[in-house]
Length: 115
Ligand SMILES: [Zn+2]
Image (cartoon, rainbow, N blue to C red; front, side, top):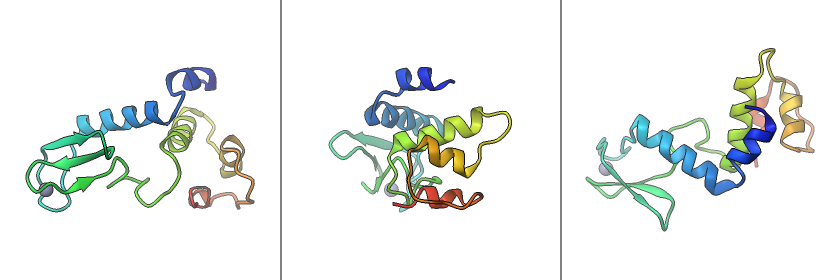
């Protein structure tokens, strides 16, 4: 997917949220509290709620994105372009693509995702 198609497919945070929500549903959301796999989607909270114990699970929970304050759209940009690039994607290139201004040593991608 090139950047033009990405911008058309994912114009905002809600389109990215819908994408990740659909992926989570397909893969199955497992409750951290009771291990139940049946959930409701809470539109008001943008979270899954366990049908067994009512525990809330975010879209990011249990993923690489869990402890990040970075938006879902920025995560999706990073995931899309890292996976789409045949010759790899350096930390500096990702920094440029995400318009990060803080210096970040190559190889320390996690620094890009700190708030
Ligand atoms: Zn539960």
